[in-house]
Image 1: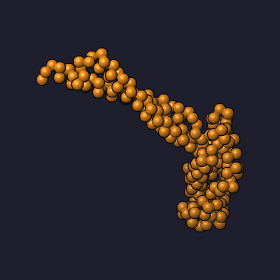
Image 2 (image 1 turned 90 degrees about the horizontal axis):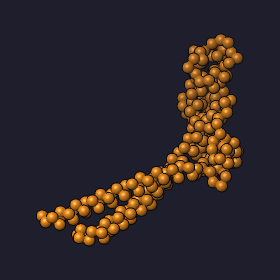
Image 3 (image 1 turned 120 degrees about the vertical axis):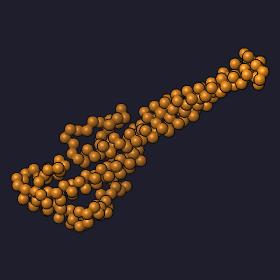
Length: 227
């Protein structure tokens, strides 16, 4: 093989490597820059107001957390009704029994509470049938204004950040706060991924352009190395 052919082949490999390096570097930089921009955009707040989509997502998460706690509450009551002991039950359950002194008193109150739940939500509630419960607590459009105010009270709107949870918060407040944090985080991450892709695409194209420009300059300087 003539030496010129070897040089041209080697130069092409170098150019391809440079193209890959420029593009990869630009893609990486674009993804980081775009992702950072997207993460700090705070898509859950627009023009100083929490978006309806954000309120809906938070509410769905809050209802799920409340239902999970309600299931644990029922399981706690069933344990207490059987044993009279408050061991291995959640603190929010123990509150109902804090004025009682004996296991028999605990059993009696627990059975009363279980009967009350069956009356309100049907006998199946004790066996995990939550259809009537969900129908009772479901969110409706009429609730939007009140729910938005509840959630808004958790925020420092001016600085677009969530206030710390009050140390005296009850379980309802805790679940709402937890739901808000989770949905905020999810939306911020999704926005970061979206803008990361946009940034990568834009700077990736820029990287290709820079690479071709560099190759063109190299060819102009060394015209004998053209294929």
